[in-house]
Image (cartoon, rainbow, N blue to C red; front, side, top):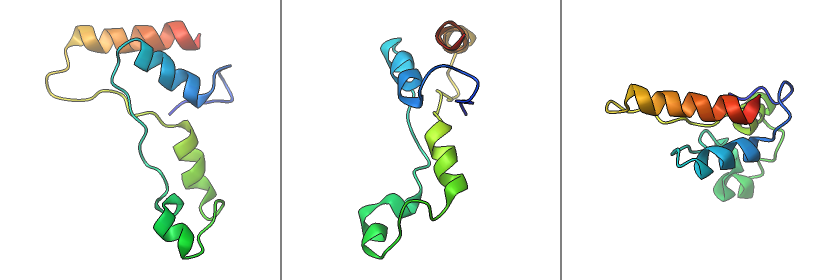
Amino acid sequence: RIQLDKVEKTHREVFEALRDADIGVNLHYIPVYHQPYYENLGFVKGYCPVAEQYYSEVISLPMYPTLTEAQQDQVIQVLKEFLY
């Protein structure tokens, strides 16, 4: 979770920087009511503000059994260089 109030980067900028460094990040946890089906049922943005806040700050980092320590270090290094 990126504490956007403590860094001078946007969620999208952090995501793109990691992708540009060939780090396979992704965005998850979109509030389900943002899907067209639920929007058609009348759900609107603001229905669950905490879920929306979380979605606006979270980036899924690589996490799998064969991820090496060197790859973990690369993720950390890219984040340090970009965020600070």
